[in-house]
Image (cartoon, rainbow over all chains, first blue to last red; front, side, top):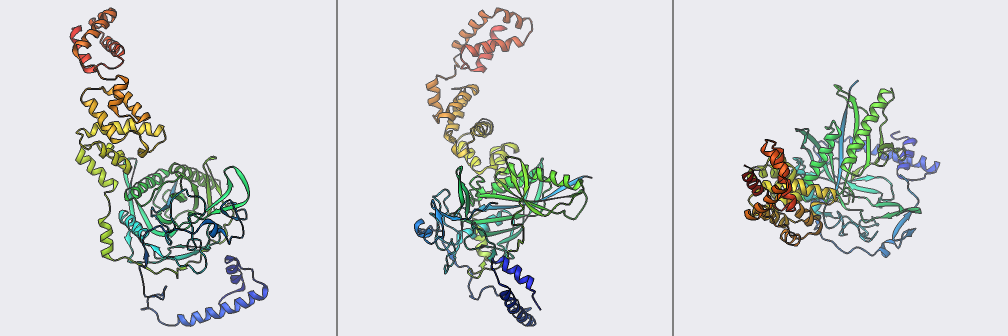
Length: 95
Length: 478
């Protein structure tokens, strides 16, 4: 096995995913086969191949530093589950 | 056992762009909550970030000023964590390919120059702000203001090269000065446009390996950084001497209690799972662009200091004080424009003006005494219209009201008396009234002369020209 159930639980916790026992088993198996496929890719010699982080053959795409109108606060807050006094409202976060 | 500290600093500076890093929302500080946000900076589904070119240029400028090597290709990366001030649930930052690396900053500590390494400079987006109370009113949750989300943030990471809190303080002062000279950040710690976290550990003097470090956060002034480091170093030495182990952790500085406290929460798993940002293409910086930006670099404080010494024959010390702050150096140069005595101007600015501004908690930009006020006051002294002593009265009035010096002199009747006849008359009166002191002086008690001089000044409310008084007084007594 390339990955353990414990690692799947860890990754799920980082991603704030609640997985059932059955899902954990399923994910472990699926991730394991993905990682095995990675091993297959790794067997290729890529010494002279630049790593690809982007499929577009582009760089330096900019915007100029110009202020554009923002959306109104009402629009921006419209879909918030909770709001108050012009703020998004969340459960109390104490640092 | 003797210990030494090992300190590295992470400085975050908000860049002074007009618009945010990936969208056109304004970066203006102090707006009503959530009025400078849009689907891009709040991470709505389906939006795409587009990089603000000026943000990259500001980072390159700073990199050049700090002698960092600008990477020909840099990339953005996603740093993933969950927190309510981060609407996308990831921060676009840079990871293994930052804009620049391997620079340094020379600082002066105790009259010695120390070179402090800069590890890297990278660009990222700022997060929003959380409120846990409104003013002093408690609220039954936390409020999120996303105006700050997406403001371009420059992170400057130093090497662990500092050994004392004083060195850390000197580094911050020097770095802030450079960012201000470059005009890339407001560097206002109270408004949060400049923030600093410190990594600190201790080790026995002579040991090469680093000790276990603590990350100290929540300092809101340079003095606070210095104090927090002093506290934290003493704490780590005490823990070690008591035979306990230092724990790697994040600690928060409490400025009121002047202590650091362990931030026990959310310590688990600082596993950010960085990966290359798929929504942004790489940044390629070629020699031509680099040269063009280099050509726009302004004169920095160290160069300006040298020039002040050469061009205005100022002592090193004066030049250092005047150029540490860009605005102050500009104030000085505006003052001496067309004025022939730079040292006199330097004296007044360094002593009187800085002291008064400090006492009033004002910046040089807020000074009611403009360079024009200062220059005209100096000219009044040079012409003999007012004495240096009266100038202090004029200065205080200008500082408080912003009135021009000639107006103050006229309104308060402060014109210096230099007329020899008038002064001689007053001296005769004083001598007649103080026969005893005159005798003492003639008997060889030179201190009596100062007393008589003081009496003349008192009689003229300080307006008599001291040089003229001195001369006539001596003539009359001989």
